[in-house]
Amino acid sequence: MATLLQVFVAILGIVWFVVIAHVVVSWLVNFQVLNLRQPLVAQIWYLLNRLVEPIYRPIRRYLPDLGGIDLAPLVVLLILFFLRQLAANYYYAYL
Image 1 (cartoon, helix red, strand yellow):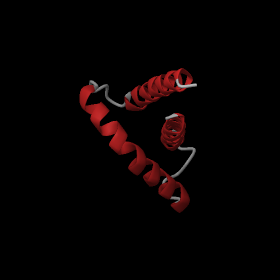
Image 2: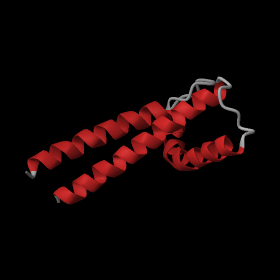
Image 3: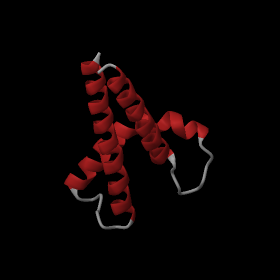
């Protein structure tokens, strides 16, 4: 059981990293530090979008429309934090 919890926490860490990377690249693109006309930047951007959109989509259905502000990444990060803490509590209970 402990091994499964470690794998679960590792997967949560990877998802956390991908969401943070998406947020950072999003800011850099919006502040015109990165240009989507560059092929490498465009590939990274589209890859990150393909990875996070299935996670964001169900959350965006329940969030109010705030114009240009997207709170889905914040909600995802809070959920990931909660799940990671929950897994850590179960992990320490099995030790």
